[in-house]
Image (cartoon, rainbow, N blue to C red):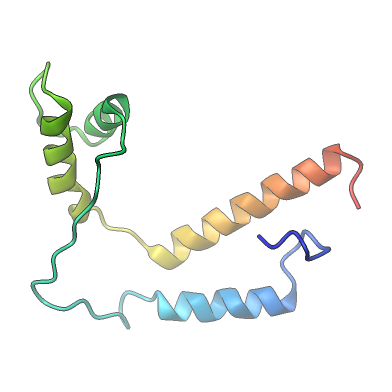
Length: 110
């Protein structure tokens, strides 16, 4: 969020921008080239994070596997996850706005 903006609610200007973003992220309107490769660089992801991902999604990785083996399994699974980009992005923005608002409220506000 832009800290130079002096408000914590979503104003008309930002709502309009978010609605436009929602339209651009509409999966029905977005086309992905057939055969397009989706790669994920997991080199900076910790071994423990990969293990949590494996546990959360119940991926078949033998116990005691190396970080590289976990990375390969997660990289193979990651593109299969269905994501509603518009919904998730708006939820994230709302979450950040709420955190910022709570921080302002607890510090005495504007």
